[in-house]
Length: 425
Image 1 (cartoon, rainbow, N blue to C red):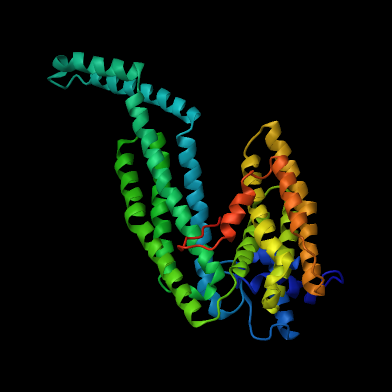
Image 2 (image 1 turned 120 degrees about the horizontal axis):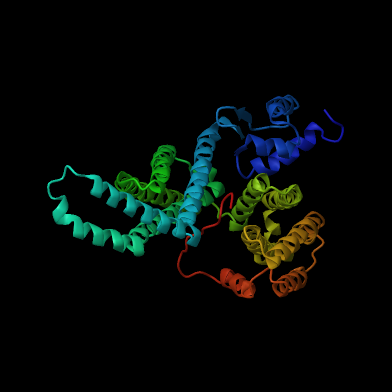
């Protein structure tokens, strides 16, 4: 054991996440503990022997490659593992469908449609066994010439199918994000129906994905097969997931009536920490990954302090976190992910500027909040946050209606509105 990475430090970093989300991928736990994945289980045993876990018995589940805080949270771990795989495949399907309806792919489809029209015409000509061949030659020739000159009808039908499927996949992504946003805030609300519903949806999605290669070959049987799978996702799977969301929301409402209301900021922090850790494990740049994990670690410390001292939720620094820094982080992450997919000078400049914010400005602001929470030295950080927001607006990193959006969030809501936040975006 390294002197610079003692068991106590590994325990602290691990529990900053596990206290909010009682299950995490094994790879994420290894990064938090700064050890290899094959040493996580052994180090957990050392922590238990030292008595660091008073009320829990965390373990490594090798089957799903996850670290679970306790046996009671194993259903939550199974649901998270299946949901993560389903969400990843859903986004893969969305990307394939976007590519299929892109201008470049559309030109390829025009060429393919002309080739199919020519092949079909040649088969008709060589079909000498047909007694009516001579009578229909004129009609077949006219149809061939129409498809050869302008195969728009064929292409429009195929592109239309891709757009329809993309709408279904977008709805599936939104439903999954809504479900897991609720579960991350309330891990104990996992029910026995959730895993079978997610697994059934995943099977239907895989069946649809398997039909996409057949679409590129122009197979006539693909249309019926793909439509059947897509209809099953739209008419069976989406309503089942929507019912799960309703069950979680109704259970949450019942809890709020019977228990002391929990500040929503704690749930938002847990979701943000999970999102940052997930993105850090997916991004190719080691520099931005380190920055995101640093921000996640500071948010974990802030959350633990607020859980321990709920009266500090009303401090001015916490208001700055709620009104400025958390929504600012979400906006910057969204803009950063968009800019990564572009290859223009402005996009490259936005990526570089955003990385500087994540590596310097934002961690410093969060450290100031930690210092205030631990020393009770209240400083009004609102002017500092406002100045930072305005600077990033002028730099084009944040939308100009950012403050308006925050004010709308801060106003009392007359009607309940579903909260949707992106997961492993």
